[in-house]
Every structure is written in structure tokens, then in C-alpha cells.
Length: 177
Image (cartoon, rainbow, N blue to C red):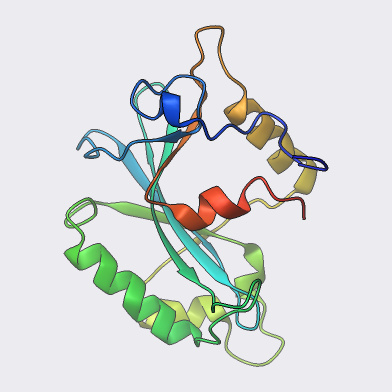
């Protein structure tokens, strides 16, 4: 794709099953030994995104679930307030078989701790039982981490996979910002 930020990105259906030469793969059951992380990027007028990522013993990341707050109009958020987003996250984590009963470490964009209008988004979500640590959103470091994770080994295996059921990440990741 012309202007694509991550030239390494591949969505190759021929690799969904073998996990070779494709970042998109068939969904599978997350192993109990994997560490689970929840990433969050808040949006109100713009979409919000929640992703759940499993890390295997090699350090390979699998984005296996998403919750995306977007209307049918591109780049337009559902205007859901933070407490409601938190309640829905909590419900997903209580009922989803891949998440139920697992320890989940939340990481979010540091912007949710801003208190410019009173109570921060992070505080509102904590009151609903959903907790996050501040992510490091240093742009260059994050960009380099993505290039590293998207790069394929000589055998065709990347360090980042996305389950094919995560259609919003698949749609938005390769798009230039």
C-alpha cells in the first residue's frame, strides 16, 4: 500500500494456518501459560480501542481479541463515556472463555490520567474495577518496536500476530496516520 507506515505488514490467507509470512492467523485457544495484557486507547468523538494480547514463552505477541468503539462512519467514535467502557471491559473479561479467570495486566495511553476537566478517565475506570498502568507512548521507540515485531524471521515467523477475528486492527494497522 502506497504511504503505508509498516511496509512489513502482511495479511496473507495462505499463511493463516501455518503462521508463516502473514501477521494475520487463524484464531486458536490461548494457552494458560501465556501472559495476558489489555491495551487501551480512549476515544469519544474518535473511536476507542481495547485489545487483549497474549505473550508466549518466546516473547511473541498475539492480539487475540478486540473491542472497538466506532460508528459506521469512518473514524467516528460511539461517544461512550469511560465508566460504560470500563463496565463493558469488565463484562468481557468475566465472560469470555479466553479471558475468564485470568490475570490481565492493563496498559493505556498516558493521556487518560489527565485531570484537565476534573476526574481523569483512568480514575473513572478504576471506580468500575478496570485498572491500567501508564504506557510509554514515545513515538520513535514505539515505531521501532512495531517494525521489530512485524519483521519476519528467515523462516517467515514474525513476533506479532493478529487473530483473523480482530477485523478492526487488521483494517486499521496498515493505514498511515
